[in-house]
Amino acid sequence: MKPIKELLIIRMSALGDVAMTIPIIYLLAEQNPSISIRVLTRERFKGLFFSCPANISIISCDFGLSNGILGIWRLFKCIKKYHIDAIADLHGILRSYILDFLFAITGTKVAIVHKSRSKRKALTRLKNKRKVQQKSFFDRYVEVFKRLGLDVQLSQNSSYLPVITKEDRKENIKRIGIAPFARYFTKVYPAELMKTVINNLSQKGYAIYLFGNGAHEYNIMQSLIAESPNASIVPDKLSFQEQLEFMATLDVMVSMDSANMHLASLVNTPVVSVWGATHPYAGFMGWKQLPINAVQLDLPCRPCSVYGQKPCFRKDYACMRQIQPEQIIRKIEGLLIK
Image 1 (cartoon, helix red, strand yellow):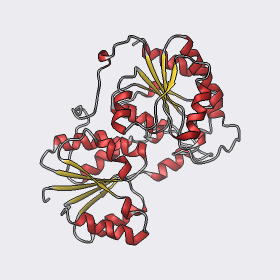
Image 2 (cartoon, rainbow, N blue to C red):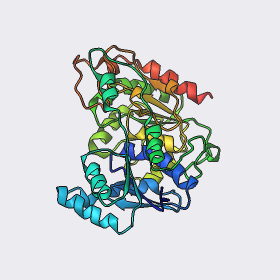
Image 3 (cartoon, rainbow, N blue to C red):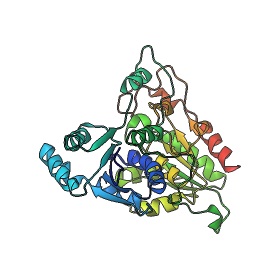
Image 4 (cartoon, helix red, strand yellow):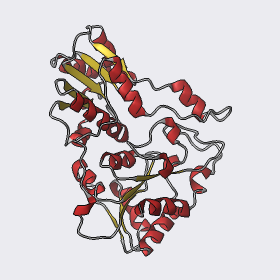
């Protein structure tokens, strides 16, 4: 097999999914320093790679996504100038399939992530559900590179993931980050219950920082911290680098099954993750996060969705509403005393 000198990695969206690729891409780059790695992703996600190894560069895919087939063709022509030897498609959607095909017919080696859709359907169907742990997507990404003849050792630690030691902080107050939002409603812990969590932690003297984005989420966060003097809102204008550096100073992060779980994981901050319609069994647990720190209920209907976009067939959202605030608080304090 011809040695790979120029590798294209495709992962265009979403934020949390792109963040999940970073530990694997960094390890690949460190363990294969002679390979030039180009990551095709959205312009707004470039900032996630601020600390990347020198042999990684980012290509924006935005101009190729807005004009259908013609746009993808333009994207293909743009990428061709880099003389790509192989493609690792970590996205696996129609748009990336078209790019894969265009490169494959020109003789470029292509490997595409296997999502095991039939097993995921069995995991989320209402009848004859098979609650079986699916392969982590970190392992699935490694498999893509192996099919190209590239090995990635996950046992090693990347020296490029941004970490700030908590010993550098001046104060001794325990710091808790809370990201109470997610893209889909079925993955969001009810606001009135989250407010109870925040009030309880605030009364115990912990410093609490809420993460959100946009005016709507800001208004909700204001109501969540209205009775909690030790709680504040993290500005949503921070760059990805600033967000990650801030998360690195936290003792624990509380997140839904959302991008913030994956962002905090990049800086080695332990995460208490709250799961509703979705489930860690689908393979989206954060990088090196422990399943024991996940808060979830063992309901016969869970999980009903891989991504959380399906409405609750019960209509009562019991998977979230029946999680007691005390369950989340115990997980948080269990990590704070370690």
